[in-house]
Image: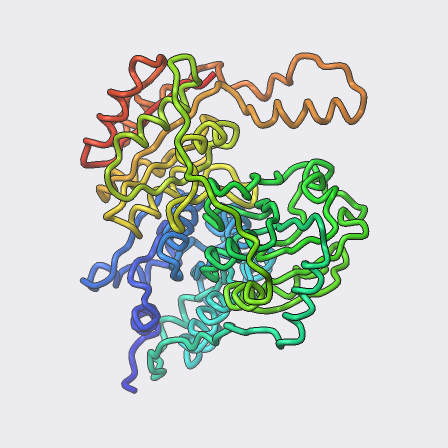
Length: 530
């Protein structure tokens, strides 16, 4: 292979791995390779005004495209800005390939300006973090990073690229990374045992997570649930793992209080867990929530099986193949299903429900919802329930601010779809500058700010805190309020080149939805939900 600088060779490697878009925010120690981007007609750079936004857009792109996404951060300070979103990507198993520059290996002893241990910073929020120190292995390390990111359980990876290493010549060839298959099936005897444990139960319950969607096991999961007649609860779920209008789907367990989540299995005598860990609560139940129930756990992530509570049978295997094998061992007890009908909407219903109903009525093509509405989500999903794989993405990992950048990334990955991102007034302000990126590149995603004037979720959580400690209810902390001063989201959006409209009453909903969908660029709706 001919010699060329590493800063040129890395783009050959990115292209070999199908990554021709870089999401980032430039910095001085990355300027060597960023100076080349504009000379590459087949390569796109999507500029974000802050690193949190860059990671959020890339995460949305990654999820919607089901492919790795390339992120460029600016050394330690930029990596620090992106840490929260990287945590979310790790929790959600997004295969982000994150690179950041540094001044050079030769300056290691100087403790110079912006010097930091980038690998140590990135390690807690990535699946793999490393630094390239020799030009002969730049592409090798990038291939390894892609392989690790894309091998289930997937996750973000980080590679530090020092300037002097990239300036040096390399003769490495740019070849695609090898992604090993994990389409594994348990032995027949283990599938027989799983069926035996579940068929011996009178009250089986199924707990599911995004591992179902990753392996495209929605149909197989549904067949197992219907053959068992078992209620299904979403646990660590942010995508369409099952048609939520199926009568067996009971909703989500929540991510806050273990005693609430445990109610889903309180009466179960057998529990099938697929593609999730249990339970992802901030305040998890320390005691075993399963009691004497038989527990079968299927997951490609061996770390999650039996991590917190014992199981009777753990299967490190592909959920789709395993569920298909399990279904073949279960008698068909399926009853006749009734079709879902969207509930009627009344002028007295909350504005979020009226908006969702109007959106459902007006959209004629493919609709993808990116949902960070949190407390407004139940009303949204009542009229726009997640049904079709790839049509719904939700926040995960606890990071606020994913709604706007996530919708932008989703639209970039799925340009033919109508993409609408829902977020709150609080969450939106974490990353509102992402609107500028949407305007700059003409990304025609739509954004709905559900404005209740406060961090409403914190109201709900502190009420639980009061109950647990026998504290008499009183005024919420003033720090939960967002009304003083009020935020003018339409003016804010228009200052960054995005058209918008404010909706305060039911009579304005239909026109706002029409204006939003008819506009051929990004558009924001400020929806008052308080």
